[in-house]
Length: 565
Image 1 (cartoon, rainbow, N blue to C red):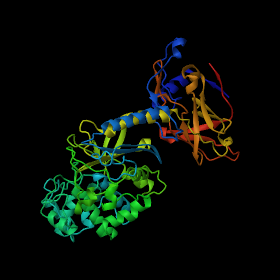
Image 2: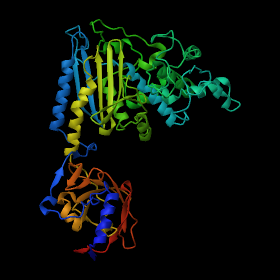
Image 3: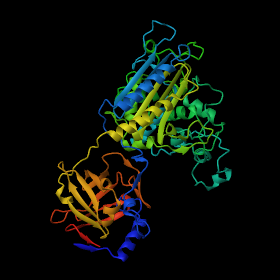
């Protein structure tokens, strides 16, 4: 097969290149037609390296760069110990379904030199990390079909819920537009839009706590609803991040009593703690639990009392250990062998919902997360503080990375330990993933995919298989030979399923190449899917599409073309 490169063809190719820019390495942009010095033609400027966000892959330890980062984490937490203000810290780092590192510093009783050191089974109060469990309950009931929608108004499940919303966009006259048959009380609930998901994400507008109560209030849910009837929302729901212990406690009790039909703590124990094997996590601080606890202290060194939070228990009562919290992290990362939620439900739970004002302590809010950006990654975290204790859990789902820090005492005021730990771990994990060998999957039979293909007789490709049957696609042709460096003309195709392959770079690569005035994006190609056509009667695929790049009808040709000038 011969292809004549005419001036018309070159013009067409130039136009097409602009349209397809940023898709494939073979869809580059040619410089303006003028004589080009050959020696400059092959000069390639390699800039920032990609993948910018490397895909997590199995790691073979030891990994020097990761060990160095974990040593820095160890030193950071070790030097954070203060015999008076912060006598005990336990921390654990999780990657996917395994513990990368755990560190325990100080003693369970900082005032007693004979007290045993902390370990991964030392018990700490986890304060507001308790809010994770009402959220898990909401998502589980939704997944099981007992909650119709995450965006159902609370009033759907408890009929006597009302609260004033003077900041709402809809005013009293809007009541008239609501269909007949709905009572004024139900209409007010509809207007307030205090939904289940907003309650779990600090977007409900509910006050921080019930008026005239403290976190030690011993009332019940009906009494709480009665107190709310003449109370007022502090923000129009869904418009502002506002921290509310009330929202989580009310959500937990209503879901337990009205939907699950049982006590909240019983539900959490039977549906979360027991399935995950979190045997050292709970609500009741018995004498046996107290003996295993790190003693919480105020900044003065005075021991903090172990308050019972009463009706507000769902918002901050719980205790746990680093070992138990590691199981929770693995479950949230979708890696634990005993799942509580389905993968799609977990994705929903870990998705940020709303960008907060600058005055709020987090960039975004989620259910029940505070979300901040660090080194380009969304750090999904929950922090808690309760007299004598501080706790943090922080996930980076994109890296399959998790961190738990439990403290007895007052956390450092001048440094965010979570952010500092991740400043060490994120670059190390990226480096480890980039250096790890890529696992490429061959198709069941490579033969149907082998051969030559063309995109409109303008660009040409050959698909070959290596000794292991893994496919590679190589671009060729006059323009490619003179402009694209040899090492970037070939791409590996890793088999996924049913004639679908994924582009895979085996090693780190430049995000973009500059060849004279032409710019080539390699990053846009990484991970793209090739969908090969159903096999012909001869057992060969007649072509393929790359829908993610809007590229279709790359067709098979019978033999390698011969080019002439």
